[in-house]
Length: 628
Image (tube, rainbow, N blue to C red; front, side):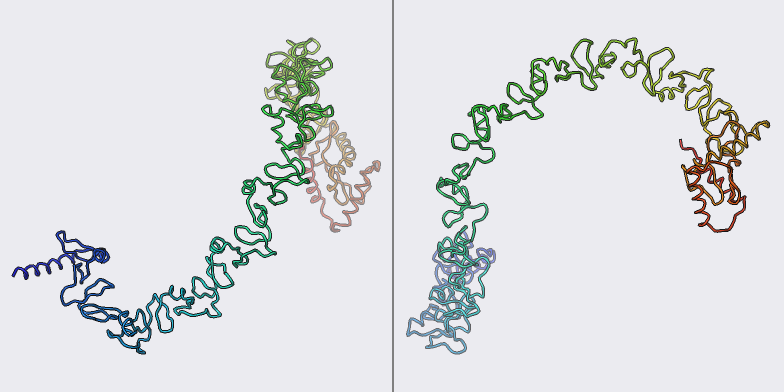
């Protein structure tokens, strides 16, 4: 009764235990702790698997398979039941050399299952095997027997279209990571060729030696020339560091034991025929330039690319350790050394003709910014009369002194009392005037005008004096200047400024009409004035010529004649009439030629006199516009 209860509880415990075991440890292991373990752990503990439980031994009525340490209610396929055990095909093979088929040992496999694997008949070989006639063997077994694998078949030789062999498998070509072949068939990686076989790679082929056409080896590959950054050592290409580590030198891209006679100088493990840049000769060797001239080393000088004790007479000056004939422009000579000019000046000395001196020589006694001059340079003046120190003109003015005769003085002398920008003048310079009558300060005429004053007799005054009442451009005049006429407010204007018709010039005055006693004289003078102005027309603008007549521009009118803007200024010479008598100057001749050319080029239709007058007046106004 007790045994039955225990079996019941065990069966209940199994169901409950397996239902809660995880997939990583799916087997229930009945013990005081009710553990869950994996199949591997169960077998390791020398237990057997029965269903989903790990037990000490197979229950009665079950069959045990040793290869899997599993208890079965019925022996699985591809096994044979012998007593309480399930055996595989090796049992049949060991007994009368038979095979296992359908749970029975038979002499040979039937046609429905022609392949054998471990003595068991199968319809086809498993996926992890290859076919060798009727046997299913592992790929490694096939290769170990000296055969090759073509797809899923173990063959004695690869077919012609698959002559590349990688690990015993036939390929049409080697894969990229196994691109090197041995004897034209076996695929290897570059490392396998160079490291394992100690061979070289030439045209993707693993060869024992490089051919003469590519005799040098670079990292195991055959090449015709070593790369730019490498050098030849025998038949190998090596880095310069490897050559140096061998205590060798480099000459013509080769690593050799010592420099040859044609390039005897070794610098940084390289051979030179002469000392290179930044190196100089010293006792039949080449040393660094700084090693020669540095105060911490030899402390010598360099002449003709050679380290010498002192500079020779042909190059006596020392410029930064180099012997030169003359110092560069930015340096001066000081004790046979070329030094920066600031070093000379900071040592309380002077610079005269490119040389640092303790005092300026007699031929250049003047000093400006530490340099000696025969006289103070441009924009510099003597600081004090009788002295030789030069200061800038601006410094002199800043000290509230005056510049006179290239000297900084306390005040201007009597012979040059006028001042402008700190300079003394005998009279105000051109375009400058005295600020106030009786004073000596000079200002520009434009400054005077800005102060709304007038310029008279080179003086800036508040108003024009009675003897010079006329004004033009803020200047005072006794009479209006030439080419101008006065207005009632005493202003002088040019004739061109009075373009309104009906204005006349009479006695340098601009009037609306001529006085009655002067009208005939005005007309006569106007006609004569227009004749005289014909040549000016031709010079200023030759296109103002019409067929049959000449349009005269506005010009200076004689006293009492109408303004050039008046309609009376337009004078016509009809082509059929005789022009007023005048000498045939070159300008008149040219005008007549232009007149003839225009006469033939224009239509023969004659316009009315009024139309022609209107057109000429418009041209007259356009030509006589102010040009100031």
